View 1 (cartoon, rainbow, N blue to C red):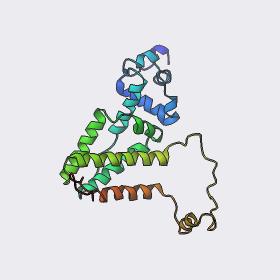
View 2: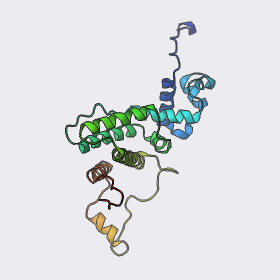
View 3: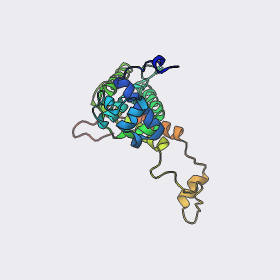
View 4: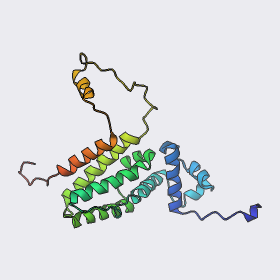
Length: 220
């Protein structure tokens, strides 16, 4: 096919720039994302990228928008209490984060602001209110705690270790004489299961939540 017959490249847009940036992060990690690298990914001069995102900071903020926008809140099918709704929402958030493990550190360290996140929080609060949880400061506090918990859990579960994979042995060989308590736990059959651990922690937060105490009132 001649050069003249090549199909036209779709016009560049902010959305296409952000999704290409996320694709680079997914493959290579955030440290490899540069405007030059992004221009090469899109097949354009790097200066063309600046017409849609002014700098690298805005690029990372945009990546968080894309991921927040991928959280499927409306598709959650839960018929129960607001606690059940909240568990479903957090599971959906975890799924969205696990789809982009190398980008989780970006979400965990960028300012929590932007239209996609605000739209997501509005839908979350709306579902919770419909299930019986009032949209108040307590609800916002619980959402913030659970989003932080979920983000941190996925980072620990799927994030790449700093400095590469560990060379520590998988079996530490603990003995009752040197580490009696740890050895007893392992002898009892404990094994790390990230799905089970996440679910237990999530339920502990949600089921144990109480309203904030009034001034002078003891909590709990």
